[in-house]
Image (cartoon, rainbow, N blue to C red; front, side):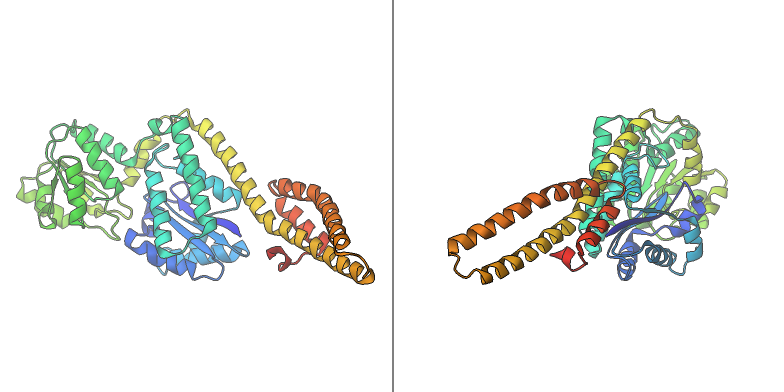
Length: 425
């Protein structure tokens, strides 16, 4: 089984493309089912965040059909054709795929380097795939390893404290624009992990009234209670936004939930006070034309990316990269040893079968041997074989964890005539 990663991120595609490729949370299950139905894909999970769409696959065969299948299913007849997905996507195989996910989990590949929101997003991706029944031992093991690496990086280095989440970056810019957040009226639209973080950061910044709205009223109440805020009914959202100073959105909706005409009308009724909107949604929650309204500042992911680009690079990055490299090597070694196990078992079974056949013929030719002699003869032969097989077994396990591990295993199969059937013994 081969791990394959097909991904498009902020490093290789503009935000406009990522917006079109983004998969809303309520559509992840359908995409997983379509991918899992592909003959070239045995296991699969999808990581869709505000700055990346990545698919991780366990493939039983060649990589090329997997890449084509992923591009086709991700495109899905949408605005970005499969050919363009193929052109943009980075394809990583085996240890390279593992190293990339480990780096992502540690926050090294984030727009906001060191941010830890990605950990919750990876866990959510794992839960979605488990619920859809599209993962098994290979992909689940990869994700578990990535989360372990991330935990080590965040407990053994200061990468998390050096990092900044997109939500925090958005509030930094809003703070500068508004001349401070203390005492301001604020609204958070969205009760997921990003919405919860934004609400907490707003409260820490000392905002005055803090309202929380969500498509799920129970979710809005839960977040509001956690930050001493007020849950907002859907019908009251626009009026409240119109008389607030800052709005943070993170809904996960498939299309904008706030339109320019709605915001214009709401602000007109409340006197047109200045409004700063931080749109953390992917796809965007706010229609771009909202940013053209007088008195409205719209901070989208492109604006936040430009803000983050000016920040100094955390000096912990080399240390975390070294940790990721070491963990990747260990993961690859374990994977190769796992791959070696059935081949080694097949070798032992093959030799044992040959020995048992020869012992049977020997005992047929020497019918006068006692049962005790039969047993002693068999024990001696098997003891010799175990000694002969010991060194090849140890070396096969060790060599299988190296760069040329698959070549050594294939050589073992060829030398002893082990076919695919033998390898499952």
